[in-house]
View 1: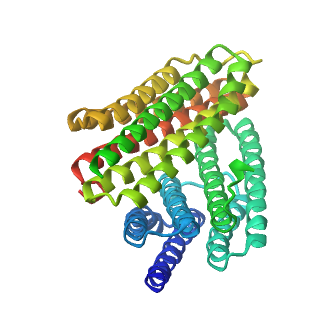
View 2: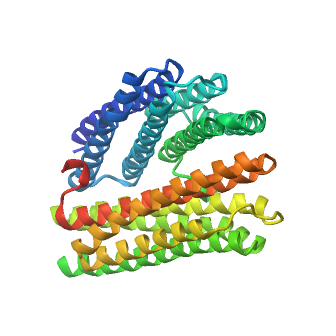
Length: 216
Length: 216
């Protein structure tokens, strides 16, 4: 029974890694499409959200099947319920990447009023948070997870830096306020992606320690 | 076994209703605090998000315990996995209500640059969507659920109406652009609340029909 469970868990872990990779690409390509004014890539991110949704469904079905058939002990059940939470956050990140692409589609034919330095930094941190959270979950490294959780602070700070910058831009150049608001929304979506990445790290921590930050 | 399952399901349904009620109050009070410039109420919404988070955790534990102990058949498993999804969306709505309250805390001592008509309409529709989705889930009424799903279109339209209005306001009165952006964020959070309410309706529909919109 245990060997069967471990085997199924391995498959589950592989699927989680695969879904994580897909979500990391979605964030990366959403910002790349914006930076390169690449309409095709924006469209690709938009449509590939379906793949992420299917992956979530597949992993969720696997989790419920394992619970049903294998009757896991408490610590294994905690592991599986953590995966169930992580994939929900991964799926939401996919949605936000799709939202960014939708705005990008309106922006590609315009001259941008701002550079993308901070937006790129936000996306890079978020991608590393997702990647490292899943890896740390698999190797059960609580120290790294705590460091990942801290990274979200920088993502939040960057959102407020961008917000400040855009408000100043609106004041100086009222004609471009619509575009400023589009960039503000993109920054907001990235800030939310950071929140979800932080959630993933927190669920990874919970799967190992059995304690979720809400209960500390 | 079936009687035990039905009994546990009844408790689960009651808890879901209770959590739904708490979330509906959070939306209602978040917008009421904004409208009445009521700092205490905004604080109350902010802190009571913990209650919603605990409710989610409790219902989730119950769902996993039922799956584990009762070995539900496919249709019952679908019911429980729908509840698991619905509470995730409910919890996210709580987060957005908290976000609205946080902005409200900065706004209460200012003269508002816009009336709250559309914001109130958004919140009223969202509250009714949550309430009716959960009720329709309990009585398994697919027709009502389809009508609830349609309501999200009006929420989205209202967001774009507010967005347009705020961009015009920024153009006319550049000094108040920070406040305009605060209102824009509030409208965005309400638009997201509508999305989550729509998700809840879609999971209710899935629990009855076994078909989720992603697979149609």
